[in-house]
Length: 268
Ligand SMILES: Nc1ncnc2c1ncn2[C@@H]1O[C@H](COP(=O)(O)OP(=O)(O)O)[C@@H](O)[C@H]1O
Ligand SMILES: [Mg+2]
View 1 (cartoon, protein in one colour):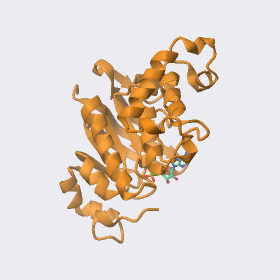
View 2: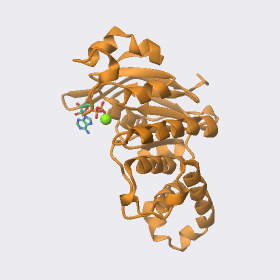
View 3: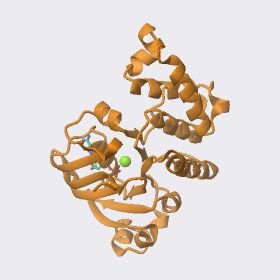
């Protein structure tokens, strides 16, 4: 048990008649780069929302073993509590404050984590000033880590997709997470940005020791990055294994209808 960071047992999530997750059991080992793949509508984002306290599954258990491997039951916890426990995420659709600079967006991540809240961080009232210096230093450090020091003062709206994606990772890291959940981090990026992102994600795990849980449609990227994968289809886990095992799994090939290999999945 102590080598796991997430342990999901028999989780079922329903919205009226729609079953988004159907008896899902899976786990993530501490320090692992783990991926969840599957066709559109398979339940990948629902899983992330369940792991982060955004959705509350009706059945099953989700245990997060964060700092000191102390088990925390996620179902029933509010999203900000899950975040404070050490679970950070990025979203499928970018959620930057587009009128703020790169620096300000990361700083908000650092300050909201210290309990000031997004509004307090933006207003910078007297109560927030105490920690100002430390969050400035931390923000600078994180921008350097993701390779965006030269873009610190650029308004986020004018950044490229690739830069926005890196910035979101920096903002997630600002909360000092044990695990970082990335929902399609390479969506909308070009081939060279994809390579940069792959390297960055690997660096987050290798240098910061943060476990990575990844949803990604780009099969080349996901197969080169993930050490192990789960495949979801219609809300259920249909396969688990290493990239090589997944590539040659007939159930996986079937799930990606119309394509002879998982490499040719169409993006929608
Ligand atoms: N908030 C919600 N309300 C109703 N249905 C939802 C909600 N979130 C997800 N679903 C449904 O759950 C299923 C899985 O969706 P999702 O988790 O977004 O899939 P994926 O990320 O794999 O594309 C879909 O049928 C979707 O319509
Ligand atoms: Mg999704």
